[in-house]
Length: 217
Image (cartoon, rainbow, N blue to C red; front, side):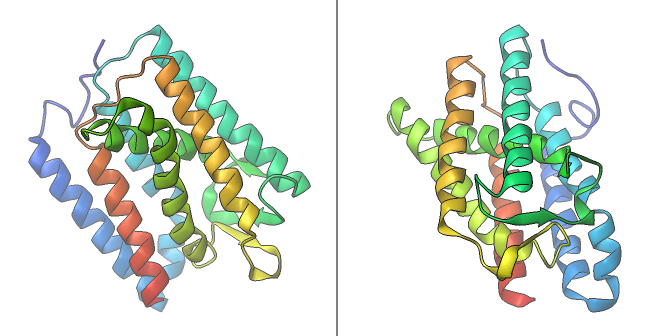
């Protein structure tokens, strides 16, 4: 089953891609300029949801196993973050700030969707290569860790989260890799089709956004 909702089959995919590039270019400028940074921090959850929405719209095949896989990855991502932020035992000591939206147990609900977004996009990128299929399990989590490395530098600027003593512990990246591996394994085990026409663009445009933001601001 495919979702045939806006903008899929309503707007040429090339125009959708151009919109994504323009959207994040405007977002980068908005965060760079001091007078508009507060406004753009306030709309951060909506920007995250937009990327997740587009990935969902262009997913090629919804079925029972796919839905279950998505739900498991979302719950895994959310629960491990909830444990982490309340105990400091997973990633280290950190706290979520206001830009992440609605929280449950001091954990924004959107963070589970972000884990799903990243594991899906990273898997899609690797499966689009000619590398052996088994390498996806190990390389896709590395893409997720690389994304997080620059996200961590930008998160306080975006009012997303804050680390104790302003230091990101190394175990954060170890945990990211381990959890990323589990998320990718769940998607692969359930046979989720990640051949998504927007996955590569959405991953790399967000990655570049955080890289540039960490350098410029």
